[in-house]
Figure 1 (cartoon, rainbow, N blue to C red):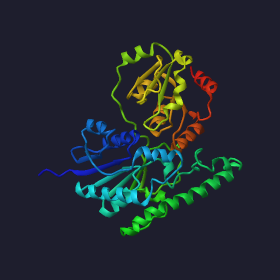
Figure 2: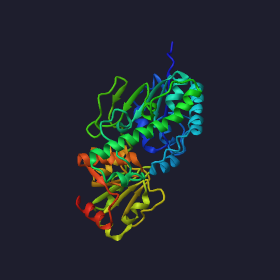
Figure 3: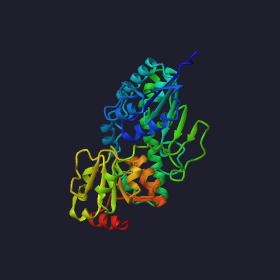
Figure 4: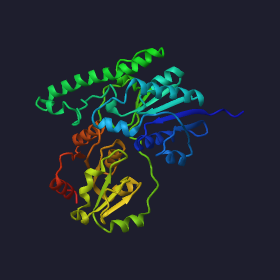
Length: 365
C-alpha cells in the first residue's frame, strides 16, 4: 500500500529573496513523502516550476506597495480590512488543499489562518524580527523622529528607540487582535508574537545578529542561499575584458536610479556587472548587464559589491569575502548594513557624494 504524501504549502512574500530562500528550504523535504505547493507569483513562478513544484492562487499583499510604505516607515498596509481579506483566503486554500504543514516567510496573517484551520505552522524569520534579538533595532533614517534622536547619547537613544518600538508593535497588533476576537482566536501580546510560528526558524548567523536564549520552538538554520546554474564563463570573461570588476546587485527592491552615476566615463576602467536592472538605468558601454546571475561566480572576480543590503545578498558577499557598499531601500536592509558595519564587512553609502564613491571603490582595486 502506497503511503499518501503530506501536503506542504509555502507562502513567501512576493519578493525574489523570499521565494529563493523558501525554494532552498523546500529542497530539504523528501519528494517521495511530501507534495509541495507555492503561492503563485507572476514574477517568480518560473523558479517554482523549474524545481518541479506546483503553484496555487491565494490573495497576498501588494509587494510594491508594502515596499513603498516600508521606505517611509509606514505600516498602514497592516490594516484590518486587508489583513482579514488575505487571512480568509489563506484559510480557504489551506482547507482546499488539505495542508498538513504551512510554511510562511514574511506572511503576517498565516498564524491566524493556521490557528483557524488547526494546521502546523513554520515561520521563517530574520533574527532581528524576533522578540529574542539582543540588539536595538535602530530607527530608520526615513522615520520622522530619526533626526531628533541623534541629539541624545547612544544609551538614551537606544532606550527611547526600544520604547517607541514597543508602542508601535502594540499599536500594529490591535488590528490583528480585532480580527482574532472576531474569529474566536486568543489575542497576542504584540506584532513580534504574531509573526512567530508553532516552529520558528531563523535564517541568520548569530555572529552578525546576536540572540538571547531561544525557546525549544526556535531553531537557527543559518542563511538559505539559492544555487543558480553556472553562467557561460567564456562570455563573462569576454565581457569583463580583464578589467577590475564591480558587482551591482540591488535585488528586486533596490533603487537603481541612485546608481545612475556609474554610467560616467570615469568608471569605464571597470567592468560594472549588474543584475536585475530591468529598466536599463545603467547602460553605458562599460556596463555588463544580466537579468539574473550566478552571484558566487561573479563575486569570485570582485573585491567590492554595490548592493541594497538584502539578506541573501549580504550573505553571498560574506561567503565570497567581498566588501559591500550599501544603499538600502527600507529599514530591514538598514539593520543588515548595521550588522555589516559592526563586523567590518561593509558600510552604508547613503551619504556618499561622487568623490566619495570614487574613493571608496578605488580602495578595493
